[in-house]
Structure formats: C-alpha cells, structure tokens
Amino acid sequence: MLARRCNLQTAPAGRSAGWNPVRACTSTSRRSIRVAAQAQPSQAAEVASSSGDGSSGQKTFHHGITYVSYEGNCFWVKFNNSGARVLVDPWLVGDLSFFEQGWLYTGKKRGFGGGSGVQIDVREVASDTDVVLITQWVDDHTHMPTLEAMPRDIPIIAQPEAAERIKPLGFKSLTTISPGQSMPLCGGKLQLRATAGALVGPPWSARQNGYALRELGVETPASLYYEPHCDFDASSLAGVGPVDVVVSPVQSVLLAGYPLLKGDTDLLKLLKLLQPKVLVPLLNADLDQEGKLTTLMSVRGSSLAADVRQQLAAAGLSGTKLEYPAPPGESLALAL
Image (cartoon, rainbow, N blue to C red; front, top):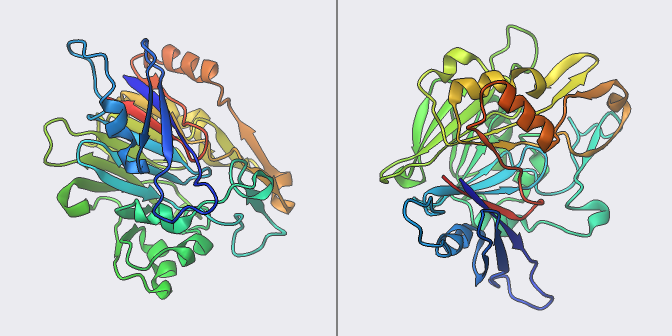
C-alpha cells in the first residue's frame, strides 16, 4: 500500500472561481516522487497514479482512494477507479454547537476558521462532490449552517431523523436510508450499504448509521467503511468485510463517564470483523472546545501512531496499515 499527501494551495487574489489550484504530491513509499499539476481535488489521484516507478506488480493509485479531512467528522473521498466523489457529514462553515447552545458547548476547528485565517469555499467543495452522506441527526453530523450554504441541487443521502431536519431546506434530492438498506450511488458507480452504527440516546433508541461503500462496474473495486463513533452492531456488519479502508476514531470520548466515542475499546473488534488493508484514524476529538459540557468530557486512549501500531500488532492486525489524514484540506492518496 502506497500513500501520497497532496498539498492544496489556495487561489491567489483576483483569480476567478474556476481557477485550478496546484497540488504537489510527495510519495511516502520507498521511492519519493514529487508531482505538480493543475488539477481539481478529484483529479489528484490520476496525477499521482501516473508517477509510479513501473515495477512489476506495483500497486497503483488508479486502484485506490483519495481522502481529504475537513476536521471533526467531515471528510471528502474519491474512489479513483470509478471517479465517484462523496462528502461525508459536512461541517464546512462556522463553529459547532448543539441546538444553537454555544454556552453549553462550542467546538472550533484548528486548521480552518478562527485564528487560522483559512476559510472553506462551500460551493467549491460542493461542485467537486457527487453525493453527500449523513450518518446521524445530531449537529456534529447534520451541521445546519453548512447545509444552508450548500447548493440545493446536490444529492443528499441521510439517516431518517437527519433527513427530517434537512427537509425544510428544500434540497431537490433528499433520500433516507436505514441500517440494513442498500442503494446504488453516483449513477451506479458505487454501492452504499447502511449498517447499524452509534446508539445516540436511551437503549431503546434506533441506532444511527454507519456506511459501507464499494465501487461497481470496475475490475478492481475499492471499498470503504465509516462509522464516526466506533460504535456498531456486529451482526449488521455480516457480509460487509473485507474492506480496503476503515475510517474510525482510535480514541474514546466520554461525557460524565458515558462513552460517546468507543475507539479505545472497540476499534480492534471492528478491524477483526472487517479485515481492512488500511486504517485511517478519524481525529474527531481534535478540536478546540469550550462551554459547560467540556468540564464533564474526557478523552481515553492514544492517537499517537506508535501506540496505535502497537495495538494493531498485539491484536494480530499487523497487516492493516495505519495512514493518518493529511493536514486539513489536503489530499491523502491511497494505493490499494
């Protein structure tokens, strides 16, 4: 498995909205190769794939995934073979609060907004996206200020309660999906399967969604599984694995002792079920946080690469490669 990190530079002042940024991709494989091209985010993988050393049997970026983190639960992913592009749990503008109660909790990104001076162009991201997926109804997944800023012609697939929140915004294509259901996406380029994800609320609540995505109609399909809390019903994952990539928290976050994220306790169970080639840690606890609730919150476990690799090795999962996201807004290209 090879990886390249691709730096996305912002457009200079005075450039038109259609300006194509330059991305310089550096190989982290044994042979370092630097690539520069005029390319949209969705083209980064094709640029990288043209730069292999030609050795027999080498994995290529054409069979792979390009991953961009926007911090929190939000990421963009392209399936390089089919070209399908997916934006997950978009939070692209402003801060994060729950039910507009910032005094209770406010989460702020470290790479965008605030003191960074870097803002995300929501319409630019949307124009490079084929479909939006939303896993949960709560605000760190259904971020209403971001959705309000998005063009109404972008298709959205959402967990049912999330869809009810989004419906008044008037999107032209809003589809609900529940655990156990499947559907084709992106004109038949992908198959989406919803799995039973996090339990948000009392024990009798319906579980939120996890998602398994797999390419269709290509010789070497890539696949990805994502659930933002590392909370899952193992029975709903029957037949999902093996997958190429798992995106999951590696730490736990607790609120008054109750685990909201379960990375440090359930990650290894998840990986044994799905047997991925690559684990991409979801660093959704890496936010600047303030408000009354933060006094009741704690983080358990380590996100350090050495610690995570040690856990993988001890669990007999040395075959799963660990690849951290590139800095926010930059591309990580994974050859599978």
